[in-house]
Length: 263
Image (cartoon, rainbow, N blue to C red):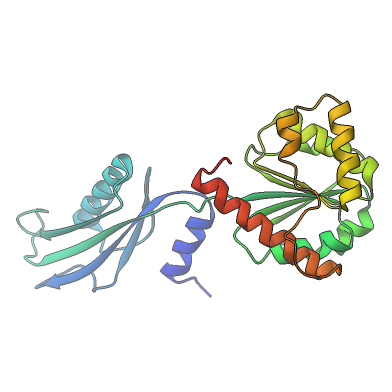
């Protein structure tokens, strides 16, 4: 079954590009398409849909490309097909042009694929984000669902994955234990391009981790920003509720980061 124009608009937005959707909103007299017809135009021109083809569509595409260059968010145009477009038919067609921005990419890296990570990844998959999960245990990675928003990385050296992450990625470490968490945290803090770094554990583990990071020579200001214990202070110690508390904290810190609050 072919997709509707609205489904194709959603697909283009998911692909990470900005584009213009031009819609016929009013016609008078002879018109090449019905009210509601849409065309999708990217920076390089036509992408999908139609508002009638020919000269009128050429004008719509040119107008849309100019909007993309100037980053205009919307526009309205009414053209007489005979006098403005030089077509033989004498109708009048009105168009609404709307800029559709690419969706912001919120990237989250989860180190470890154990019980809490299993719940956390499944919760995060319901959100608009992309997730990377790294673990040396293939059997645990295989327990995670296959999903287009999830990348599974099987590696014995999880800290090396940190070097591949996009600046701005949120990092949540919940590996098999302290000896696996610390190298990940060191690698993340040494890059100093990640707005959120959290690690699962108790208050006692948090003190030990901070001491280890200090002994390694990590900047004290970076250590202070570490979230450990990770998650908001509510719920019980079941993996599902811990995952919910971590998700809540991730969303909270995402909003703070977007707003530019660096406190």
